[in-house]
Image (cartoon, rainbow, N blue to C red; front, side):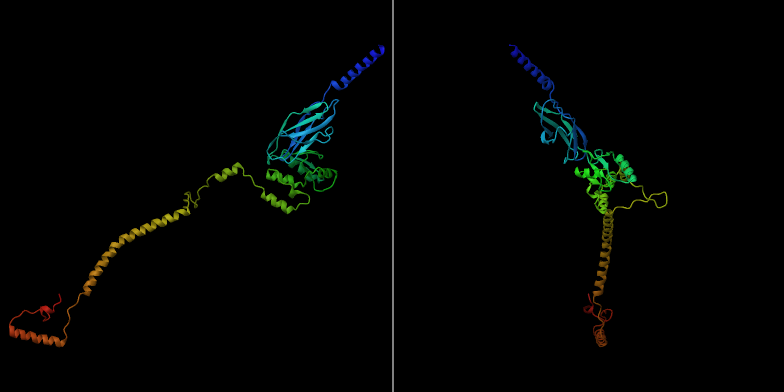
Length: 332
C-alpha cells in the first residue's frame, strides 16, 4: 500500500508540473500593422509571435480574404513586403497563426496605396555621394515629403548613389531595390509626382532622361488660369479712345451681301431709264427707216414740166403739188 501511494503521488506531481509548464499559458494571436505604403507596394510588420509551450505549424498572410502565401521562418521574420499592387487602391490584410495548441488570427489591417502625386511613401537610402551632393539630396527629400534612411531596409524604396560599389549597394541589389542617380529625386520634385527610374539608372543615357523630363506635364496654377480666363484690355492707338475690335472674318460675307443687294437695287432703278432710251431710239430708228421722196432725174423733170404745161394749156387751172408732182407720186 505504501508503494502504491508513493507512485500515485508521483503521478499527481507530474501532472501538476505538466499543467504548470504547458497549461497555464497558450499562444497569442499575432499583432499586425502597416510600416510603409507606396504607390504599388506595402510593407507589413508584426510583433514576435508568442507560442508559449506550443509548436508553430505555419504563419500565413491573407489579402482581401484570400491567402497570399506563407511567411518563411515565422519565428525569425517579423516583416514582409507586398509588391505589384494597384495605385490608389484599398487592401485588407491579416495573419493566421497555426500551432499545435490551436489556430489564432490577427486583427484586419486596412491599407490604401498612394496616388502618383503622393511622395510621402518614398524612403531613400543614400550610397556613395560627394558631400555637397549628399546635402542637396537631403534637402530635396525633405521638400518632397519623403523619408531618408541611413541603411538599406525592407522599406527602402530607392537607393541613390553615383557609384555602383559598397556593401550598401550590394545589399540594395540583392533586395531588388532600384539604384538611381540623385537626379531622380530632382525629377520627382520638378514633376510633382513619382517618375520612372529606368532613365535614372547609373548606366542610363542622360539624353533619354532629358526627353522624359520634357514630357512631364506642367501644372498650371489657379492664378495663371484666372489670368488666361480674364479678357484682354482693348487696344489703343496712342490716345485715350479705344480702338474698336476688328470684326471677325465671318462678318465679311455679310458686307458683300449688302453691297450686292445695293447693286441689284441700282440695276433695277436704271432698267426703266434704259427702257425709255431704247423706246426713243426705236422711234428715231423708225423715222430713219421711213422712205424719203425720190428725187426725179433731170430728164424726167423736164418731161414732167412739159406735161404740166400741156395740162395747164389744155385743162386750164389744175392744182399743183409742191415739186410739180401729182397726188399719186406722194408717199403716204
